[in-house]
Image (cartoon, rainbow, N blue to C red; front, side, top):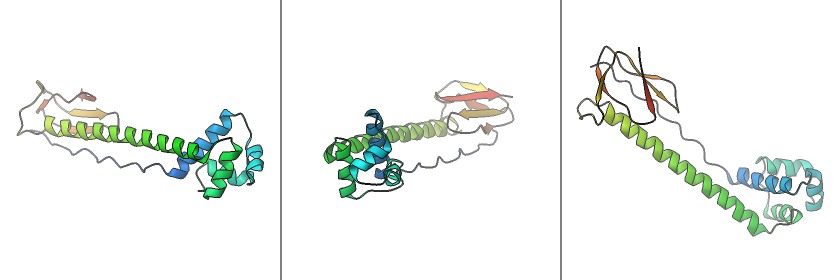
Length: 160
């Protein structure tokens, strides 16, 4: 059998920060109200530069400043916190599903290309096998006319 090459490990993405999502919520509400930054900042009693940094997730405001900005937007503090929590929860759930999908694909790949396990798919006799994954670059799996099990769904084979 040809050479088997390990797939590169997928780097974990950093988790979204509260301040990033808070900024998205505040900016989204301001834009939905069709208000400009300087108007909301003046109403809240903060500088436009500081409000801009909050909206971009660069600064984490105190509870007093956050309360003033929320009030300037006509929101209660609990509404802002609730929206941020919902967005964080949605993103966490999406990330969990992505992680499960990646782990499932890794298990499928490991199973499909292990020579000591029976193939779950019909065998295909190929020369050089390249696996193209939507998440990464092509990786050589086998070489030299080896018999390789067909890959799982989502993985494509090219023969040279």
